[in-house]
Image (cartoon, rainbow, N blue to C red; front, side, top):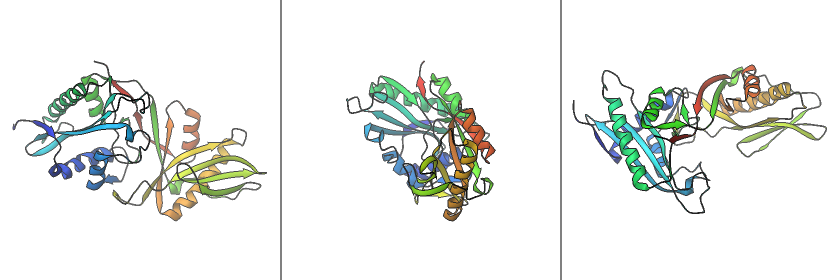
Length: 303
């Protein structure tokens, strides 16, 4: 077999890298892929991370190549050590994402390539002299963050290298817009549409009092991203006053949002909840959502 080579990313690798990333995205979110432009832009900066991205001082992308083909890749971040950086991120080195093909007949040595690349990643973090080493799976695609349970080969690699899960677990849910509660005007309840913190906000009022709101973001499929099929949206915020018959009002808000999403041409809606939040998850599943996957956030190198 040709020797494995670990080296920095070259621009000529862009198509193979994008293909490798899209294989991992497709295992998490149905019908979503990202463009070469999206991948290359995300290697330079992450504008959606407007708080943490300015804290990054170094970015390095490494690949493992065999037979002139990129079989594994990783993107590393080094956060500044000054007081302008939040305490959690200060002087941290992170594997922002790591992807590789699971072993198969055509790629029998892909696990070996991944281990070799991981060794190079840890060596780079050591050269940076960071106070702690973290890892994640933050690919530049909607709902792909943490370490999704649909990537057991990445989890096994991280654990072999000495990373341990120290954070929380998030449940990612998805619903077809057609399966959401129907739009039904409610007696004594009005719903206003405004611009919210995380998207378009629908707020339910009764007797001048806000009872709850939902925000939906329909900008996940940005122009530089390619999504197969119709649009994808997600719930940025959802809050219902506990005294306002939570499930009935939540269904009303979801119905309002669904009507808007149909006008936007969106056919699927994502939601996110902590794995410990059983009641909110139950309310979402009763409204047409189903669990897409679980993702484990917060990995630290503890060899």
